[in-house]
Image 1 (cartoon, rainbow, N blue to C red):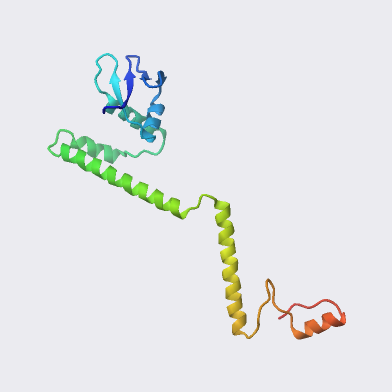
Image 2: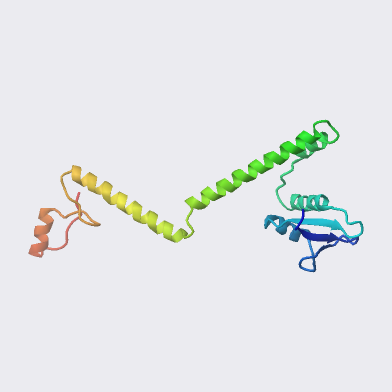
Length: 176
């Protein structure tokens, strides 16, 4: 991992980020992973690469915090692969499966972003306008089949109602 950020792990179990010159937590390491930052964790005394063990600590912390990904049956199956001739194949299979799953997840998120607009209120307004237009079209089709023409927003009054309005005899009664 040339060009990677270097984290040092000291005997007191603390992690030190050499780029930011400060101590960090496992949660900070998790954020580096989520942000796609390439890094390597080195033991401060031996300079040994201990990235895998630190990442396993991050996973263990996440497993304790919420709904686990690694259930007892999955962990049991993984332990059974160790020392078996299939160990190398299991590792390769898991890696390929997780890469494929990650690609599918990215594709799904991208498709969801295309469908879901950035402005939900604007989308609701557009949807409302479309629904009103469909309702007016359906209303026009229904009234057109009945031989009447609807007015914008309300049904047209009958001839007798118009007559009463002109003579000033009072309000109109609802049409039946």
